[in-house]
Image 1 (cartoon, rainbow, N blue to C red):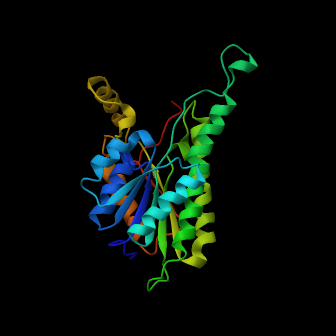
Image 2 (cartoon, helix red, strand yellow):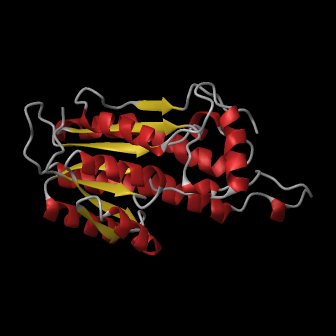
Length: 261
């Protein structure tokens, strides 16, 4: 098992949702956690850090200098042994419009933006964090660290209008084994979680949001509800610490299969 007690960890998108749950789970295991998120999430991060030992570093995952600054901060807190990539955005637009004009086709800049943040940003954090991990003293299994990425059920069953999101998340799944193979010589493992529908702030709050989430949950196989962020975080911790989990993409989705819409 990879020992993370007393080590440092990075969590992108760590101020809310799946990222926040991962921060709290890592903190409960004794890790010192650097929350990497956008500047406007500083207040949320500060609230989390009342319960977790660590720091907040304003970070755009596509900005190499900001990612390196967060990594250096983590190294100040302890040897960097864990990275959870959970930052990402979504966008829903059909490939073509309804009027037959070129102008109404999917905006190419928006497509690029989703790819840039979800896929390029994930790889940016992998390549830089793994570089820092490669300098750690190895344990008895010659491990120096572990990385968990976040894909989506859209990676394998993208719905109508999800071309950019699906492409980005399928890319994350696609690089998982390659990165695991690249990093095996330095003792850094790489796995990816493929979450289904999870109850996160993306759905909003209030009665309308609750009704919408209830309808979504009815489409799950069993249990018939949205997933809890803590369930995602439990799997993330297992993938980080279980020394024999490597190069794998694991679904956590109640057994559901997404329909076209």
